[in-house]
Amino acid sequence: MWQYRTPGIPDELFERTEEVPITKEEVRVVQLSKGRLSAGHVVYDIGCGSGSVSVEAGYQIGPAGKVFSIDIDGKAVELTKKNLSKFGVSNVDVILGDAKEKISDLPQADAIFIGGTGGDTTDIIKLCESKLKSGGRIVIGTILIETLYSVLNIMEKLRFSSLDITQVTISKSRKTSTGTMMIARNPVTIISATKT
Image (tube, rainbow, N blue to C red; front, top):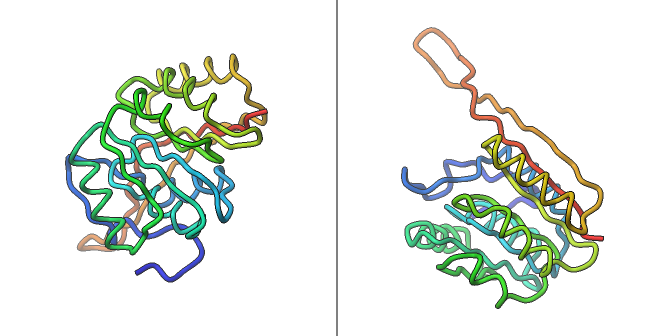
């Protein structure tokens, strides 16, 4: 379905529902680049939502790699499975449940992407730090200022280096009856770091 090596599958190609969030394509591209994925990597996608990060990570790491996608919402898990099937990605295990309970059962990871966490971001980062290989990458997407603040606090206390904070603000074109206008999307702050 997606024949290119570059990330950035257009959002409209994914199966979507109003109840389940998606990491928008431009933000997803930045997040994937911050994850520094390679063939054969083990990746977590926590709060996988529609599965857009899982699909793209699955492509990037190839058949020798493995993605573990976790979401507490059954609708998100079903949507992720639909998108994996649609794009022919078979190196992903989709897990329904609370990430705080599921992370300990997973193998060591080379890269961890954290999206929607229902307010448990700090606890999840602590658990992920112990599961991340030395030199592994963690990438956290935040919308709320309060989440950003708590993420920066916990990252400072844990064994992470090369902390990078990038805010992405995207505007997309939309045709109107008189021309083309740009519609702004919510800014997303992406925090990424390496485990030392």
